[in-house]
Image (cartoon, rainbow, N blue to C red):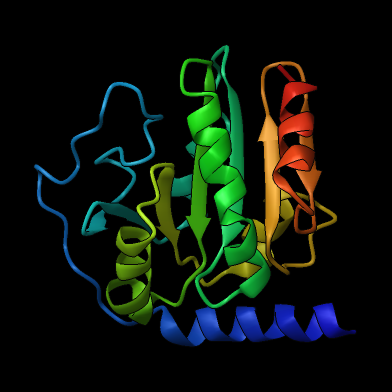
Length: 189
């Protein structure tokens, strides 16, 4: 019941906050480093907040879940206001650093409220020096995109999707420690 309340709060908040404008992109902000997954493709992210691409629809974000490469992708849904999410962020950052020479991409998909992208999300990313790819997602049609991520997902965060060409795993809870996340990823490499 508590998860349902959290989910409803998240869904209502995203729906109400989505009409708030954010910073527009410029062509130089959309540049993509060679070693990063193409999460800030100009044709997909129509705007940027600092160096964070903003996706307003699942259709634009979907390419992150459908990469056809020999890499393994670790995609975590989180928000700055979600305490369990923030507690496990260091695990994803350590994973990003530990596998820097491997074919592994870590993507942190923020579900922060759109009117907080500039005042909360961007300062948080800068203060914590997050080196993983960070994207902001604000599609108000949660009933449409949540089941596309996983049919069993009720909308509560944190959640993580790990996939590669051979398998896909959905983890609908916080990781207890880095070793748990590391072990799961290594089992898929």
